[in-house]
Length: 103
Image 1 (tube, rainbow, N blue to C red):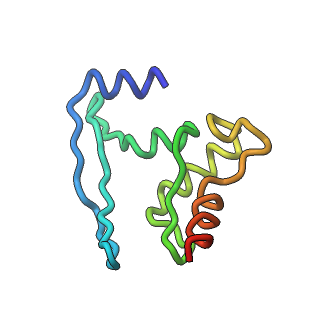
Image 2: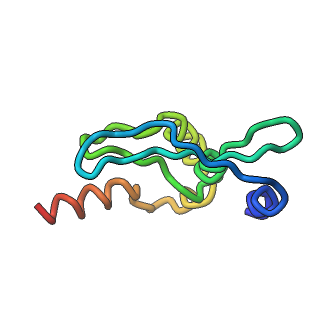
């Protein structure tokens, strides 16, 4: 996590919308990046790949942004961050269950 903190502290961040998902309300996907040594780093990918965040899914259970799903699966396989707990229910499963109970 100190790596992420230093990236945020020591660089200029740039956030741009990359997609819009129609619906009510419309959802805009935003990617935030930092320039480090000539490379562009996606902060979301850093968070997800280190196990401190997870990939979002749409209401029809499809990944919203596929690169984050790949990063999540990598973190889960390596048991990083959230995935270090063997009995962790997937956050999306909890969200889908919560939405299903509200209908």
